[in-house]
Amino acid sequence: MTFKAEYIWIDGAEPTAKLRSKTKILADGAALPLWGFDGSSTNQAQGHASDLVLSPVFSCPDPLRGGDDILVLCEVLNIDMTPHPSNTRAELRPQAERFDAQEPVFGIEQEYTFFEGERPLGFPAGGFPAAQGGYYCGVGADEIFGREIVEKHLDHCLAAGLGISGINAEVMPGQWEFQVGPLSPLEVSDQLWIARWLLYRTAEDFGVSATLDPKPVKGDWNGAGAHTNFSTRAMREGYDAIVTACESLGEGSKPMDHVKNYGAGIDDRLTGLHETAPWNEYSYGVSDRGASVRIPWQVAQEKKGYIEDRRPNANVDPYVVTRLIVETCCTALEK
Ligand code: ADP
Ligand code: MN
Ligand code: MN
Ligand code: MN
Ligand code: MN
Image 1: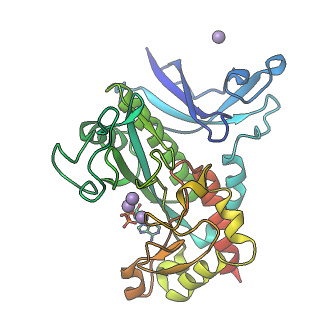
Image 2: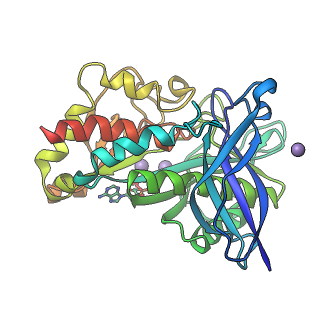
């Protein structure tokens, strides 16, 4: 007998990479082999030397096909088995290893927006819905658009065994959020990419697309972020480490080093309005949703816990944001 393995990888699209996948039929009990693809069709190679390698790194049950079928997340390698330049996971691996003793964990809040054709789901053709205010965590057909897709996506993530920790409707109609974590840097990133693939795949069956566009509607409508919650063992045990982490993110060139790698179009979203801090000014504060980095009130009260970097865009690469935060904060905490 056979089973179906959906090989999933991250392409070379600019300025934001997209997911691709194709199906391999394997004999029952077979180990997951390396596979190849045409890199000239994914902005990852030239036509005259187009072969690239898919190297399986994470697999889980395929909740859409069911049975013994699986999803297989892959790293992209060159044919000499070195990491392809688009392979940001390969850059995270050694840094995650280096700081592993600090036990860093992340919870990422993935915001996204459903579209039906050219319009966000719930936006009337050619017009706008009532202004923001009632949609966030709302209920009822006048406020909620796409819940049947969101519920199905949640069930699929759970059936796949992903560490999804919640969902909520967002401030703009048709905009939603799910959270993955807390998990280690590689785990949260791998699982977030699979959860994104499941989101697109689930919505596809409803004739709806999902986008990670950080500012899908211009004007007085909230953008979409990927707030990145972070802690180390020392931060989970005491407040000095919380302050050290917040301070380290503000030192020298760090604010710009981070922000320019937090997703394409970040200056469109981090305007200082709509619960954001301006992209070019670093700040942190307790309960402050207008700061770059927020210390949740329970954390300030209990004097231990985690911090929330509110800057990453919805379209951020989790392999990049977790690597940067670990490099900056864990280096400072090491001292
Ligand atoms: P918000 O109030 O900002 O909307 P959410 O509840 O959406 O917060 O998301 C908070 C995230 O923080 C969740 O993914 C959760 O798993 C994660 N989290 C909780 N505790 C920790 C911790 N100690 N370290 C890192 N992440 C954590
Ligand atoms: Mn072919
Ligand atoms: Mn949230
Ligand atoms: Mn949110
Ligand atoms: Mn948040």
